[in-house]
Length: 106
Picture 1 (cartoon, rainbow, N blue to C red):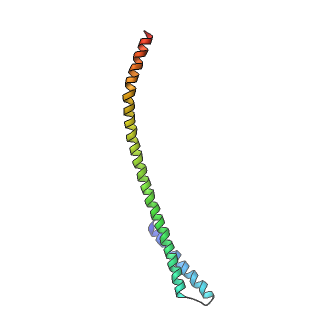
Picture 2 (cartoon, rainbow, N blue to C red):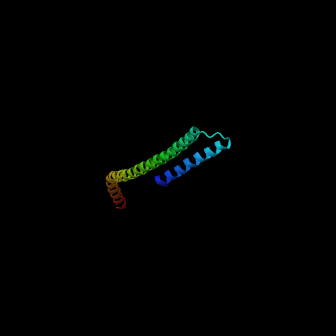
């Protein structure tokens, strides 16, 4: 979900916590604006924390994907270098084996 949608959900969460606190306190005829404010602040900070965690997770996933691409590119480069070095050893070995086979069949 995008950040705009998350902010909307946080606003709904904050509004519902304020209304719930107000209704709960009004049942006992003890409505305190400081308690309602702190419920508002607690819910708002919780929502901000959730959004912050989500943004950090997205950043970590992007870094993971870029690292994955870099590893794939490096693996291809290493593969080509190893293949070149192996070919440098295999070609003379194959030539020697061909000479030995020719000697055996004579």
